[in-house]
Amino acid sequence: MTAPPHDTRTTGNARTLPDTQQGMRRRNLARVMHTVSSDGPLSRASIASHIGLTRAAVSSLVDELVRWDLLEELGPERPSRVGRPGSALAVSGRGPAGLGAEIGVDHLAVCAVDLQGVVRAQAVRRGSNRARSPRSVARELIRLTREVTVTAEKEGLWISGLAVAVPGLVARDGRTVVRAPNLGWHDVDLGGLLPEGVPVTVDNEANFGALAELWLGAGTPGDFLHVSAEIGIGAAIVVNGQLLRGTRGFAGELGHVPVRPDGPACPCGGRGCLEQYAGEEAVLRAAGMEPREDVVGVLAERAEAGDEAVREALDQAGQALGIALTGAVNLLDPDTVVLGGALAALSPWLLPSLQVELRGRTAGPACPVAVSELGPQGPLLGAAHSAVRAVLDDPATVAERS
Image (cartoon, rainbow, N blue to C red; front, top):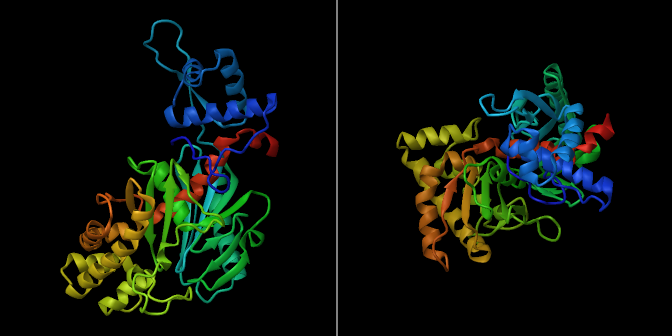
């Protein structure tokens, strides 16, 4: 795992610690954790060399982290080395784990990720959440979290935090869903409906998808625009390794950028929004297909088989996406646009028309477009890893909770 962005809310970010001896020690504990997480296994001497502390200071920090089950001893670092080899240390596969959850329009999902970044348990429930009350959805989500927690605990883990991805605008308090048009939710205190006992944060699913790309993606640059789609379309902007949230935390609502102002009405209240042309349901309508499970898989299968109606629908969706992205690219000048979620699986048929629009409308050189390898798992993994990184950023919280 790479070093975390210093965002201030839901991303497993370093807290601002007081500039005291205790605060300095907590920061050094975090430095040790991140160093071993990104470059380990390492000996105490190697850690000291990496972070510029004395071996005695690092040894003291490591002893605490081992005692808290955050690091584990693996034995001699390099047995063939001349002299006495140091004991190699790695991030523990036991102890704290982050719980990630996703509330989708047509599914709920939960997974537990350990400090090594490994998914240790997962549960998914398919079914529409459109007509359901927030309380009802939260109750079912709690059942799934309990199911995953039980599995994780059997493997020697305990849950350190829960992060929830939602398809809507989330206030900066990290708990209130201000508006989720495709769920029909307005001003919902989702954090208040979830279980107490562990830290809970809520964020937009596109933000978590972008963070997963930043932390887990292959070679993703520090500046990029991440776009993902299911029923709706979301985007997130990462600049210098940090999310660009905007004044109220609502930046990235690409799905509600109008591409044809006289187009069909959108649940957000506007007309001709991108979601009405490039969202899953819009593509189904354009292809003359009925709603069904595994929409993306069916669309990809039919497009691969040469279904002209599906290919035309995807071509039109790519065109609309390219028009909307042009405005964002001209405004933000990112290194790369990354297609995630359903867009990743459908990219062979979206990219040609999308790139034509980008090349023809972008003021500067055409922005490269990459396809995420994380696919629809991005938001869920981003949520779980954000809870993990909260531990890496301030390991002393583990001792305070014990």
